[in-house]
Length: 118
Image (tube, rainbow, N blue to C red):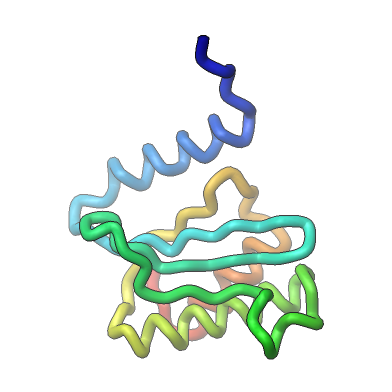
């Protein structure tokens, strides 16, 4: 017997379904994950199944900042910098089951300011 989906799983599935419908050009995906203490971002090529760039608050220079809005902004800047190094300029923003608010919004705005288009 299959376990029923949680609300978060349902939201994430709905967001990814919308992304796959609009992704006709084969864009890369900027996927984020947020926990109470940390925030993670990675740029994924779904056609090849590889991660091109990643950043998180677990890195040595951000470890002491924790999971606040300022740290999320720094992660957004770092992922934009690493995307430029990997010659990536245009991505789709995959927020998963997380609302576009607070830390998620701060990361997205910092990535946009750093040169990523989505």
